[in-house]
Image 1 (cartoon, rainbow, N blue to C red):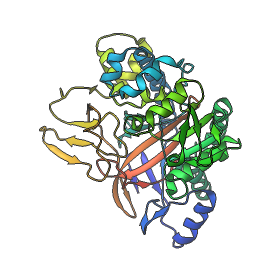
Image 2 (cartoon, rainbow, N blue to C red; image 1 turned 45 degrees about the horizontal axis):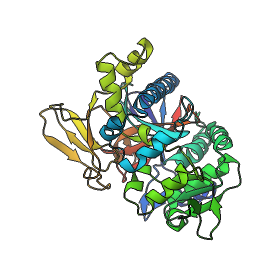
Image 3 (spheres, rainbow, N blue to C red; image 1 turned 60 degrees about the vertical axis):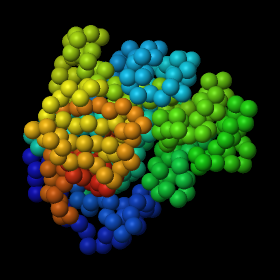
Length: 398
C-alpha cells in the first residue's frame, strides 16, 4: 500500500523469529522487546528527490542552528531562556567552542514529512540520539535483502571520522550490559568508530581529585557518554564531573556545548531572530521559512500547536492542542520533564499516515547528522505523538 509520497513494500516474513535472531547477530538485539514487536517487518520507500530535499533541508538547518547557538554562547540570560541548567554555565563559557558545524558530531533531526512531501523540523537531538543501530545496521541490511536502495551506507564511515577526531578512550551508558538499546548503541558506535575503547556503566564512574575513573579505578581522559547533559543538574556527581572537564582532565564527546543545540528553546531563539530580521542571510531565511515551524518560549499560539519541555525525550511532556485550542492528546508513557525545565510552544505539523500489516500509524522521519554531514534515515511509526512505545520501520529510497 502507499500513503502519498511513501510507498509500503513487502509483507511480514513468516519466520519472524529467525529474522529477529539474524538482526541480533548484526547488533540489533531489541527488534522484539518483552514479547512486543518493536521492529515492523515492512519497508517504506520515498522518492529519491524527497530524500535529496531532506538532505538539503538538514544541511541548511544545521547551519542555521549552529549560527544560532554561536549567537547564544556567553549570554547567560539566553542560557536561562533555553532552560540550560546553571551548573553548566561556567563550563560553557570556559571551554572553547567546537569548530563551525561540529558543536555536535553525533546528532539526529526529527522531521514531520506530510503525505504530500512537505518537510517541517520538529526537533533536534544533538546530545544523545538513539536509533543509530536501527538506521546504520538494520536498515541497510533489510533494504539490501529486499532489493531496495538505502542511503544509510556511509554512516559508519562518518562515525569513524568523528571518532578519529575525538578519540574517546571509553564509551558509557546507564545500565551497560542490561539496557539493550543503550548498550547496543554504544557498542555499534565503537565498532564503527574503529578505535579500541572500553565500555563502562555510568553508575560505576567516579571522580577522584578531578580525574574521572571507572569502576576498577582506571582513569578516563576522553569519554563518549550516552548520558543527557541536563541530568548533571540532578545527579549528585554532576558538579564533580564538570570539575574534571573544567580542569582539562576530561574531554566529553559530544562537547558540553551540544546542550545548547539540544534545547528545544534554540528553535524558539532561531524563530525569534528570524521574525526580527536579525542574524540570518537570505538563504538561511528561506530555509527557516520553508522547513521550520513557528516556535516560541511563551504560550502565544491560540490553537493547533504543541507544547513540550525544552529537554523532553521520547515524547515525554508533549501535549497536542487542536484547532479550537483544546487539548487533543498528551504523552503519558514517557518521562515528563516539564516540571524540571521550561517549555516551548510550536505550531503543529502533519505526520504522514501509514497503513502497515500491524495497523495504521503516523510516520516520524529522522535524519542523522554525523561529523557535520546529513547521512541516514530513521523511520519511527507511532501515534500523533511519537513516544517510547513507537515502532522502528526501515526507510529506503526509490
